[in-house]
Amino acid sequence: MEIRLAKSYGFCFGVKRAIEIAEDSKNATTMGPLIHNNEEINRLKENFNVKTANGMNEIGDAKRIIIRTHGITKEDLERLKKSNKEIIDATCPFVTKPQEIVKKMSEEGYKIVIFGDEKHPEVRGVKSYAKNGAIVILSTKELEGEKLGAKVAIVSQTTRKVEEFKKVVSYLVERVPEVRVFNTICNATFENQDAARELSQEADVMIVIGGRNSSNTKQLLTISQENCKDSYLIEREDELNRSWFEGKKVCGVTAGASTPDWIIDRVISKIREITL
Amino acid sequence: MEIRLAKSYGFCFGVKRAIEIAEDSKNATTMGPLIHNNEEINRLKENFNVKTANGMNEIGDAKRIIIRTHGITKEDLERLKKSNKEIIDATCPFVTKPQEIVKKMSEEGYKIVIFGDEKHPEVRGVKSYAKNGAIVILSTKELEGEKLGAKVAIVSQTTRKVEEFKKVVSYLVERVPEVRVFNTICNATFENQDAARELSQEADVMIVIGGRNSSNTKQLLTISQENCKDSYLIEREDELNRSWFEGKKVCGVTAGASTPDWIIDRVISKIREITL
Image (cartoon, rainbow over all chains, first blue to last red; front, side, top):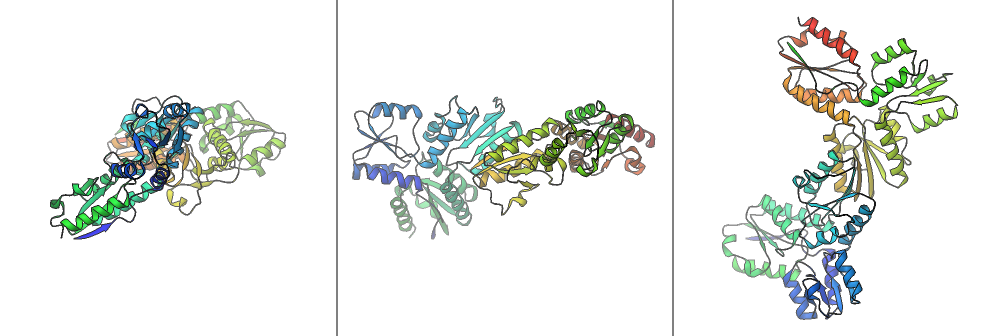
C-alpha cells in the first residue's frame, strides 16, 4: 500500500510560535491547554516543566503565565493583569485580530456575529471583546428570528470552512443594509483544507492526525469524509487499526495545525509496520 | 383568457416622488430623462411643459433644472451649481444613498466595487463619487486579475437581482480580508421581482410593461423568462401581438418601476380587446 502525505499539513505559524515561546519559558504555567494536542503538551511538561492550568482556579501561585494560542477571555486577561503575574502572550496573532475587530466594531455600534463554535476557547475569547454581546452561530438557521438591525459586523473562527462562512454572509447580505465582513479564517487552515480535499480524492483510506478537541482537525476529517468514506481521526499511533487498511491501495495522511511532526512520523511508521 | 396582475408592480417611491416634483415645476428642464419611460416623459412635456435635456450641452438657457431620478455625476452637479441655475433635485433617495456611501468609503481608503451596468446613468452617477475610481462589474469574471487590496466596499445598482449580488460578495469574501457590503438594492425592486417570479410560474404568457432602457424592467423580463418562455417586454399597447395569446389560458402582467398606471390600464384593455 502506498502512503501519501498531504501537500500541506500539520503545524501552523501560530502553533509553532506558541511552542517556541513555551520552550523558552521553563517552569511556566499555560492558561488553558497551550494547543489542542495532548501529546505535545505532555512533551512540554516533561522536557520544560511547562504545566497546564485548566482555568483561573487552577493557576494557584504560579508566577509566569503563558496565554494559550486560542487566546483567553478579556475578563480572565484583566484578572491575570491585576494579580501581578508575569504574562507571556502566546495567543496566535490570527486570533488576536478578530478579538480586536470585535472590540472596535461593537464600540462603533455594529451588531456582532461570530461564525464559529460557541464552546471553543478561541470563540469564547473573541466573543468576550464584544461590548454588548455577540451572536455565535454555525449555520444560518441560528440567525432566524434574531433582530439584526441596520449594521452587522461578522468575523469567523480562524479554523472554519470558507464555503460555510460565505453562506452565512449571503444570508446577512439579503437582510441587513450594511454587512461588514472580516474573513478571519487563517491561510494555514485554507492550505491544509485544500490539500486534504485534493488528497482524499486520490486515497481510499484517509488518516487525519490531531486532537479530538481541535476544531481545524475536525474540519480536515469532514473534508476527507466528503471524498473518502474510510477516513479516521486519531490522536496517537496506537489507535490505528489493521482492518482499516485491508485491500486499500492508497493511504492519505494529513494532520491538524497543532499536530507535531514527531507524532506524524510515528503514525506513518506504524502504518508501514502493520501493513507490511 | 384570464389576465392576472402581479401582486406588486409599477411605480416605485422614487419615481412617484420625481413625477410629483416635475408636475410642481412647470416649464423646468430635466437633466437627462426624468425616468426611463418615454410615454410618461411625453405626458409631462405636454401637460406641464417639462422638457428633457439629454446632457449638459442641451441645457442652453434653461433656468430651472430638475435632476433625474437616477441622479447625475458629481461633475455635472458642480457645473450646474456654478451656472447659477435653480436646481430641483429629483434624485431617488435610494440612489443618493450609494452615492454618499461611495464618497465616504473611498475617502476612508476602501477600494470601491459597484455591482451594476457601467453604461446606466445611475451607475455613472454613483461611480463619479468615488475619489480614486471604482470597479464596475456585472459578474465575478470581470474581477479576475483586479488588484483588490485589503479592504473593499461594495454597493449595488438599486435595480439588480440580489442573487447575482451575493455571488459577487462571496467571490470577494474569499479574497479580501475586509469586505464592507452595502445592499443598496431597493425594496420596491425586490417586491416587483418577487411578484414577477410568482406570477410567471402560474402564467403561460407574460407581458412586462416598461422602458427598453429601464434596468429594473429588463430584470423583470429576465425573471419572467426563467419561468415562462413566452414573456414579452413592451413599452406601449400598440406593440401587442395577437399571436402571443393564441391558445393561452393565463396572461400575467407586470410593469417596471417607471411605468405609470395609465399605460398599464391601456395595455390591459388592449389585451382584452384582441383576445375577445
